[in-house]
Image (cartoon, rainbow, N blue to C red; front, side):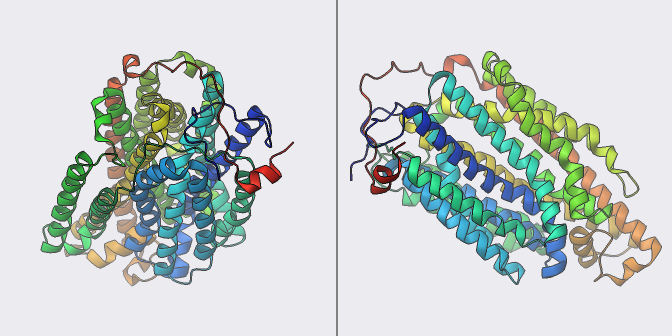
Length: 535
């Protein structure tokens, strides 16, 4: 087998035995966007189904958090490793392997008969999703240049927005019509179709300078992130000052320090810390983490508010989120030409600032509120995300050389998904703590168990007989809404801080594009490409 890793990256392949370069590249884009859509829609589509899953699987509030966090955690922990593997063995091979794992894990999640089974399946889904997500921007970066790259990134950004847009509605419709299991079963035919396109049309490109897997970096980073999320998730139940929680946080800090040490002593680290000498890379990384932790994590709790407190069905709840999610899809398409003329740092800062204001505008909800109280904030938040997403992709690819696009893609998405995982756990801890404090104040005695039920089920806590009384229902509803309001303020603050980091993104930090190469690379001559890729 011949690999084209030594050829210039991003040029059109030899026409022998393949489709034309343009045709092949657009097929690659279709496969990348299909996979990206599937792995990201599995965040928002699951959020809408959480209350139904809780009732059918008798899940606790912590288990509900882990349904989201297990997926996000394995995504974030393995993105860097998958990016390195993609640079070493080729982006196509890693992409196809991840797509296969993700599709099979989706089937497993749909068959889950307990919360623990579902959480394990979600973690395995994240393993496959990490391989797809780590290679998504790299596959685009290796094949597209100039205006075509701008068009491809805009399509990818619109796909990210589309996944957010369709997720709540599709999740609500499937959960209400067929049951929550179908939010996972639907991935199977999509995964198979994307796999066929990938095997037939993609070219395998790798980085010949990548030597070996960074095992020390993988173990220290994934271990540190896992212990951090576990500590945030268990803090309210075990006590924030307990020996167990303090040990988790201290161990996480030690592992993060060990990770930094390991990366500085690797010839080819999976996380090249020298990239942070570029202010633009630092700015976009921190801003990406902030929008994941402050905005995307908040959607989980807005879903609980709409269904568990306002009493909406999964489909009704998904429809109410559409003003935000549809705009995240439409805005990148409508503003594509404007985005090409706007400095990337400006677009990033404006997008995050709008998202922060949107979250702030939602503050003030109550158990008696109409969902329309959220509407101005949902609209503004959607505008902000739609502006920020393409800017993040453009900056992440633009500040590194093309041959390191696998690492850049992995790091960018690690900050995005790592922010989501940390945000879900951190906001969940704040939410449960606020509910517990409010109920304890109202009842005059500790309400830890009741607080856990209210956090997971709102005012529909069938396991809490006290909620059967009208007075207790009002107390629980008030505690729940106070918790949501605290999260909105916190999320707005986190996203606004992310907007401030956008000032670090400057045009002078972007390397000059290389001159067009004279020779075309030789495509990977895998049997399926020779047999199937001809026009």
